Image 1 (cartoon, rainbow, N blue to C red):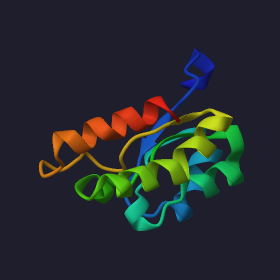
Image 2: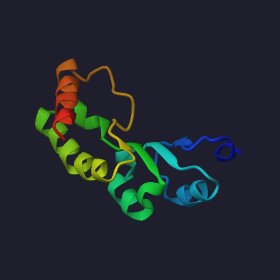
Image 3: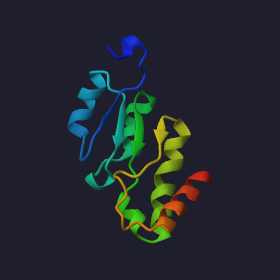
Length: 117
């Protein structure tokens, strides 16, 4: 119904492991997933290989990295974001809302990293 009325992307918000549901969602017309919980073993790079551009992805950056050192944030971004952005259909974002203990300086560092990816 949505696609028939010009809606191109229909998102499902999912926490946890989604392997058992994803094929069903795609078959039913859902073509976007967020927040792609890294801590539950969801791997956006594997999803991109499996579904290509048929699936729009948001997230998959482990929110725990934002509480750690800047090198941990950089590792999280550099190991995922460039390859996912290369094909398009991906918006970088943490896999959960960031907890209050994330220093503002760490979040600002993350935003700076994204400018140069």
